[in-house]
Image: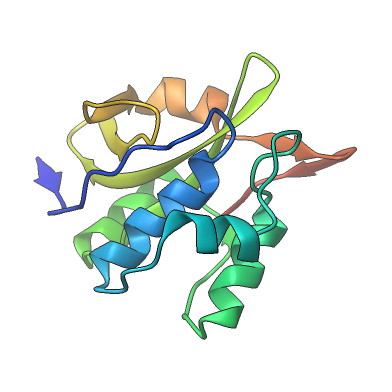
Length: 144
């Protein structure tokens, strides 16, 4: 099993999983910022949470390198092999939820889930079912 030494943070509100996931990634890279600052920069709000556009805008403001693209399970594993966590937007029950891929084994991806006190995982097949979302009317598959 491959698992990054990743900080465990927990979201404050029901809608700030994106800002919290981003904060955890920044802490992983040694950048300490308050979640409220990230929420403001990413335009996180109670109705929409944090959009992909908001996450990318914040990464750009801090001049951080990233790739936002369609990925496969193998892509996630390759990034994790390089010790690079992957922000993923999941869709379940008509809602979005941001998590950070931090590890894998034979048929699972392990996550830092801002809404959970424990590390979570999805089997590859289940992840593929939940690994898509819509922003407005547009189907999106970008993961960071």
